Length: 310
Ligand code: SIN
Ligand code: FE
Image (cartoon, rainbow, N blue to C red):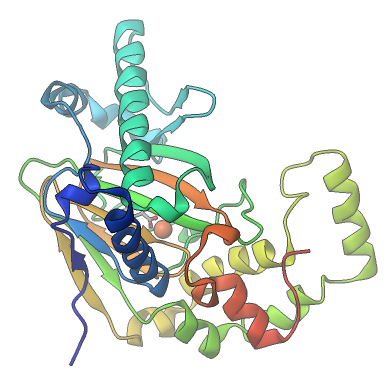
């Protein structure tokens, strides 16, 4: 029997922190385990505070002008907003809305996924204002093709990419596809995608250049073999038209105002349609994982029989 596309979470006592510590610890651990195994956790309505006023503000902006940028991004550690064009008052209001959204999501995550609390690096938040259906983007930037996430500018060295999405659209679902989880795809494609070469660290010259890059702080200089493979694998899957056409596909329709949590480095995904999504990413440290054997770095290390973090 096919497993359900997501696990609905009705545990508002847990999400909102009303449980006593021992109870919440055990249940939180179970949710972490489900996520790490490749499940998507689904909330019918906001599990964190998001004022109606903020939603109205976001939806009332003139997003048609934002076509040059893929998304609006917010960096919580620096309080920096990028990709938004508007007058000064709108800019500062948008920054306030994203700052508050990001803080609320982080607070919710720290309660709901207790084993991870504080054992993560805060990554970016984003707002995705454009209709996804029919977007014209270069192949590697297309999100309508199945892929696992890897960020060129933010190597994780084995930390896992946890993302919280919310569909802010008042009436339209956000539609995703998924397929087999990372373990299956890695077994089928990792060698063809270049795992042996990347695991070996490449040529002597390449290793030396990378060390130099690291020393001088060049972007990408601190990429581990794992990060290099994940970037390659992201592109490989998007380039593989036979895989895109023939793999089994499961359709997920996230209704208006739903929130979902996913380890997007382990759950291949594609967005087919939808508009107005909010998203916050955290990079969960390997030592916080409750089922590390499912993490992509462990799966790949056991496939190639060598360490990938160094
Ligand atoms: C992604 O592929 O990471 C984006 C998914 C989305 O925007 O819904
Ligand atoms: Fe993605």
